[in-house]
Length: 376
Image (cartoon, rainbow, N blue to C red; front, side, top):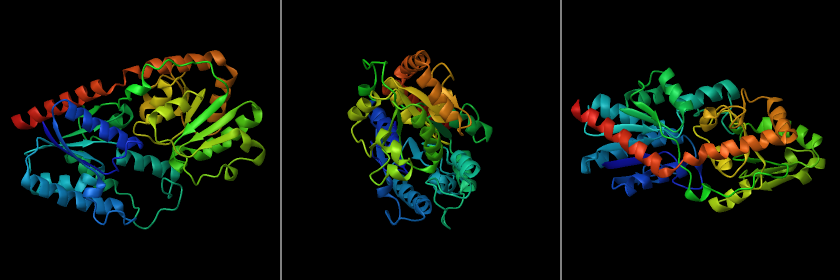
C-alpha cells in the first residue's frame, strides 16, 4: 500500500502522540508499505506563529494535500488530527475525490476532548489559563472530518465508544488499535516489593488533574511520613514550593524531563504507585509503560485505563475528584497485598501491547477498507 500520512502534532518520539505516529508509520514501512510521513512544520501556514494554530493547520493541510494528490497517487491518505476537516470536506463534497481511502487515525477524538473539557474545566484552556478569543469550540467543524472520512482508527475503546455514540461511523468503520510498547519496556525482570514512592508523570496542566494531585497528595504526605512523591516530566519551570507546603517539600522530588525511554523505565521501577487522574486521555502511554515496569496504578476512567478492571488491574477513580484519589492511594499504602496484586496483574495485562501485532491489525484494517471502497 502507498500511504500519505500527515500529522497535526510534532513528530517527536519523546512525546506521546509523536511516539505513536512515528512507530505506526515505521511499522507499516517495515511491512513493505510505502509511507510518506509529514509533520506540521511541512504544511502549517506561518509555522511557529503561536496563535490560531488549528486554523492555520486546516488551510495549510488542504493546500498540501491538493498538491500531493496532483503529483502522486496514494492508496490511503491517513490524517492525524481533526484539522483535516477542511481537506476532507473539499475532497469528498466538492471534488468528489474517491481515488484514495481517507482515514482519521486519531490521537484523540477532538470533539470528545472538547466535550470533557467544557464539562470539567469550563471556559478555561487545557493548561488552566483563560481561553483566548480564537480558542472557540470547533466541534462543529471537526464533526465534518469524522462523519465524512471513510474510516476512523482510535487508540482506545474509550474513544471508539464515543465515536459510535455520536454516530460518526458504524461499528464496521471504526476500530481500536492500541499502542505498542517498546521492546525495552516489555518482559522486564522487575522487583514488585518497593518502598512508599508515589509517582506522577506528565505535564503540570489542568487536564491532567493537577488540582486533585495537589490536594490529595498533601493529605497522603501528612499521614504517611515515609511516603515520597516523585513528579516526572513536569518541566523546568515547575516550582514545587508553589503547590506543596514547605514542611513537605523535602519529600517531593522533581525530575523536569526524561528524554530517554530506558531511563524512564528505570524511574518507573523506583515507584510503587503511579497516579493518572487526567480528565481526558486518548490512550495514556504513561499508564501502560508504568504497568510494564511493575507499578500499581491509580487512574481515572479515560483512555487505556478505561479498559482496566477496577480492583484487579488498577484502582479506577470515577469521577476523579477528592477524596477519591486520597482514599485509593491510602488503600494501596495500607494494604501491601492489594498493591502487589494490582502491580502483578497490571504487568501481565500490558505484555500483549506489542508493535508487530498492532501494525498487523492496522494493516488488515486498512486493506479491508481499501477493498471496500474499490468495490464500491
